[in-house]
Amino acid sequence: MATLLCGTIEAAAQRPQTRPSQTDDRHPVATDARLGGDERQTRLVMDLTRKIELHAFTLADPYRVVIDLPQVTFKLPPKVGETSRGLVKAFRFGLVMQGGSRMVIDTSKPVRIEKAFVLDAADGQPARLVLDLTATDRESFLRTIALDARPARTPVESKIDRDPVNKGDPRPIIVIDPGHGGIDFGTQAGGEVVEKDLVLSFGLLLRDQIEKTGKYRVVMTRSDDSFVELGDRVRMARMRKAALFISIHADSLKKGEGDAQGATVYTLSDTATDAEAARLAESENRADVIAGIDLSQEPNDVAEILIDFAQRETKLFSNHFAKTLVTELRNVARLHKHPLKSAGFKVLKSPDVPSVLIELGYVSSKQDLKALTSDTWRARTAGAIVQAIDTFFSTRLANTGRPN
Image (cartoon, rainbow, N blue to C red; front, side, top):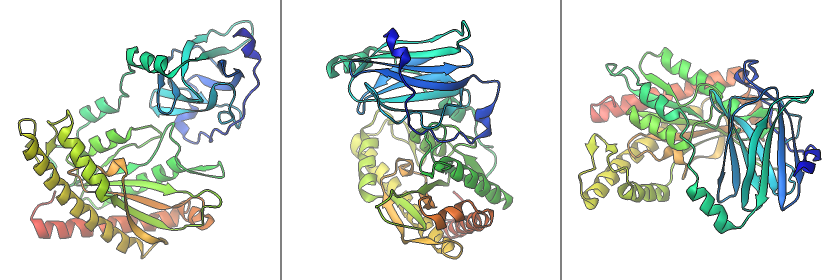
């Protein structure tokens, strides 16, 4: 494998690292990356400003190699990561949490990690991360996954547990969920504007406008360029007994797929809701509290009835808020020709928190992109969402006599 060190630098775009937190000089910097080898053996080498620790493991369907690292500032050459060579189809990299970065390497077939280590800087050469991969069969690949100790969960879980919102405050909790983050860039416009940054900026603005009303408490699923798993976003809302969950995204269409424009509001589809009800009833996590009821001691048929009831009520509230939101957005923003839709988004699957997902617009549309990057448009749109929130809670309070 030593001859593979001469492999050429491979092209594939890594989107610009635009968040200030990723340019901190306290963190090691990745300055170059290259691939070498063939479909039997492939080596990935990445130059670093200093030696670091790493943890590498494999995942199936699709075949991937994941390398967890301490926080790294990625200053790699343009177009590193997408062009294939040997066993590697592509790789991507980024922040997954404060203090932690990750590389995800897509492979063309099952692989075995022969070596994964970092060399000290020596003889004028930088520190180097070296990953050696060898082709293997699927059975051996899956056996390795089963035997390997799985990596620990990211600190998102402990952060949720130790960061409760003021318990004595009766105001409803609204969770704002800027989509993507860290290694997950989302859609992009011309390689310069990425969805994760657009929606984070909008989410923070929306938070500020909501908090100015003094009527609600706001929780952000992320307030920086961190990666948060979809399940953790939902769990964050459920643990805090949130009264509303709003996920913020921006869409994109590839060339030839049309020229759609405008904002869209999504709720969970009927099919996905039914499937989630069945999964919840059969899952090991039967102790989850649904509307304040512990289901751990209930028989299956009772649990299913209670979960179904909770989801039906939640769906009604979600649909009510979505319709109110479309009405308010229509006054300030361009809407999609079919602005109210449903789909099986995982972040909408909480059985007891009314949830919507807002696609603010299409970054593939010049007109939408201009709006998405306009301070005036964003302020007006955030204001419309706040108005929809006020209307939602005033009508819900009038109908139920409850603030949550």
